[in-house]
Length: 311
Image 1 (cartoon, rainbow, N blue to C red):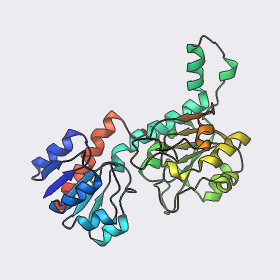
Image 2 (cartoon, rainbow, N blue to C red):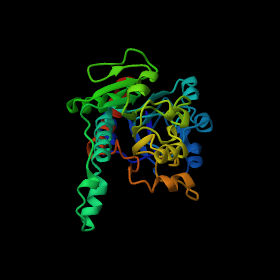
Image 3 (tube, rainbow, N blue to C red):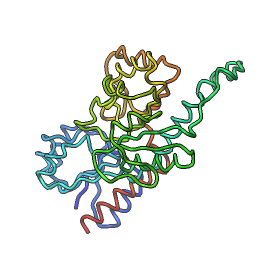
Image 4 (tube, rainbow, N blue to C red):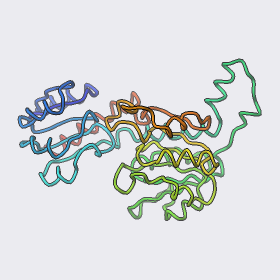
């Protein structure tokens, strides 16, 4: 079986697939159109987020048996059309769930304790203790929306902080020893913190809007390590201005490209410009699952799934 690798990944992926008898070819620079001209020669694709695998691409891939994405989600792939062609789809949320859990916790603790602000003021020669008085996580209620690999990983990290963890998911019976599953209404009534761990779908697109935010019974903190397009930036800015949202830790932004390689390609939107000015907003460039360890674990997960499926 010939596999075309469209993104550079951990070297174990190429080595172990080769050892298992697969033929690997690499192309990290050609345009989508150029790849479409030759994709009929391959039975497998390994990709991260270089470009979308759409209907046109899939129609050109007449011999394709699988697409493996070295990442947590499959939103860059036309899943229904791929399924209609009996193309197997592999992703690797198991590979970076721990990294996402740790990064989510880091954002939350940073917000609560004003670490970024404290660091900046001390480095500028100021010793402002009262202005950097923090908030404790103990006793707070953390609400998670989405309780798959990522939500579970974060809930597990929270267990030692003596806080109450609730989760909401469209699937039933997912609650466990780390989080109690509740309705969305109950979560919005009780949460002091909201953390998103959902894929980008029709249900989650622009999910966190003004109506959603105002349904919470009390002001809350927002953590988003999931997908940027699930949060309406303009409504988030308004909620930060009126105090409905106390602060936000965002690893993802509404305006980042789907390739995750840059923020945006045109003039900065006004609401994003406003967001960048809030001292109670912490940002990172879509790196929650981007650790030295997760790079290896993501690749290993994909190798294992390919070999298990076809062998």
